[in-house]
Amino acid sequence: MVAPPGIPEPGPRYERGAHARREMFDALRSDADNTRHPSDGGGRAWVESSRAARASGHGQWTLLYEAGPHGVAVGGRILLQVSPFWHWSTPQTREPRAPGFTTVESLAEGVELAAETLDQQLLGIEVGGRALGPGERIRIVYGAGEAGARADRFAERESRFFVAVDGDGDGVREWIDESPAVDVAAGDAARLVLHLPAVARPGEETFLTVAVLDGGASAGVDFAGEVTFGDRAESVSLADTLVFTGAEAGVARVPIRVDAEGIVRVEARGPEGLEGISNPMRVSSEAPRIRFGDLHGHSNLSDGTGTPEDYFRYARTAAGLDFVSLTDHDHWGIPFLDARPELRARIRRAAEAAHEPGHFVTLHGYEWTSWLYGHRHVLYFDDGGGPWMSSLSPEFETPEQLWAALRGKPAMTLAHHSAGGPIATDWSIPPDPELEPLTEVVNVHGSSEAPDSPGPIYAPVAGNFVRDALNRGYALGFVGSGDSHDGHPGLAHIGSASGGLAAVVAEDLTREGLRRALQDRRTYATNGPRILLDVKLAGHAMGRSLAVASLGDEPGLVVDVVGTAELDRVDIVRSGAVVASAEGEGRSDLLISYPVRALRAGEYVYVRVVQRDGGAAWSSPFFLE
Ligand SMILES: [Zn+2]
Ligand SMILES: [Zn+2]
Image (cartoon, rainbow, N blue to C red; front, side):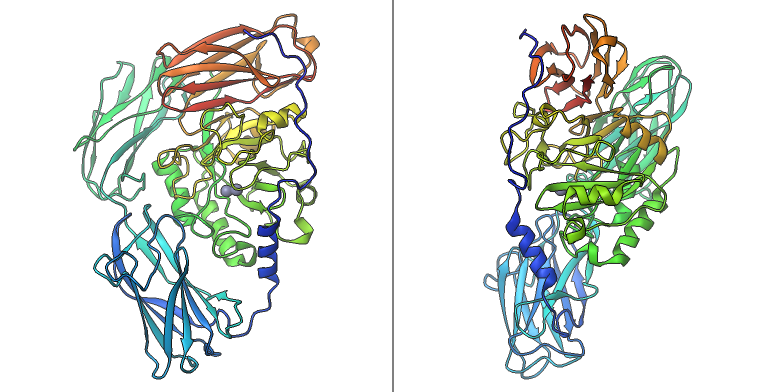
């Protein structure tokens, strides 16, 4: 045991903008400011024929491009950008036997084409001989060799073969209006995942979510067969078996009722070695309701896999989440949504269509993808959603400008991958206390909590962890979320070393109920698994700001954790350091009582749970005043 550390050391100071990726920002802005020739982005393209693929499988796709009214000049280019998301073969014209071999053929006499790979997944086709006139066509066969071309490792609808045109050959290109899209089917059944709500009341009718997924955790598996549920206590009412006919795309909900208090887990087995066990569900007449959700993720409208509609469907039917938000980028990925109102409207419609208050809540939002101050996703808690204020716009370039524009709206911002990864958060700017009460401590990029965290983020910036931000005196509660780009909100940790979930204590499963709970920091974070965590200080719930004088001399910290695997340890973090650890001793649940001596105003205390399988959870801190 270490002596109480007292008032935290403030985090290291740095100049505003010290971690900015200025070159990235400048490149995006100068590209946006470029003048386009009328022929740039002209024409249309479509899939002429295909030998379709399953996830990670190989296929062949034949595309036709037809020049627009301005044609493509000699020296102009047609660019084929195969989706850069998730391992599509790079189109190449040199190795007929290697995956991704691509042939290019002019269907216009006198037009000669020269194709070369320019970058990952990017093929440039230069026009020579004479200009490609309006309505004239070229044919591109992607995967023309015997190896075909490898598709996305994750199943998805509408994966795009993006086509851009630099019609005058000045090096500035523009995407055509609608690039051709193809579907990638799910692979064979390989995983059986089961989810229960975190909390149920004795005698309450609720549901077990059962999903048969492929090896990459994609849904849409063609599966017929019987799933058998394992032994359970007499107080648990659940069917013995579940039969999939093949019409369910591998997902089902099974009614379950538990009459006695306690912790319930359901095990299940299917054909061919499929087996799974659910998360723990606490059955209690008193325990506050914990809701699990994912507040941050991407679809193939920016830089992820899968459509917005499928994102929401997956969150509910495969991942069994209580709430979710799709937060595609404002100006990142392909295309740039800040310039595409019709695509933003599609996301908004998909969120509205999936929203069912009391059962499954969707939040509107987007990611303010600042390469100057760090990324923040913006959440809106009203029914219509709110504006997308682009980080590239001079009006909304700084966090202060963003917060000023959001002030008074039912909105929230969350800094994420704040300790490093793609870009670190500029913690020299204090988070707005109203609009940013929380931070996303963990996601697919890893944990930003502290350097000694399980699964820490890549490319960390020393002194820029969330713990350093708390040491600066910022009062931030904790959530996790996926930042999934694989189309698997809520289950991003299956395909990645880390994922993230937001656990929110809210009886009222509505947008407004979630807003109040998030605003009050009634939250904890996990890196994916649905760990149950309850932490109290002198009887107060986690996330509170508490007056030291009101707590007595030696307030007790009580930690009640029910893991999804054997616990390695539970750490108590006080004002910058781990001050105590309880060993898991092979158990998956632990109840700890720890007296916190001589607390002073300005301190904070939180709890970190570490499982032996790498799963982890972080309570929101208590803030002492
Ligand atoms: Zn981001
Ligand atoms: Zn993101």
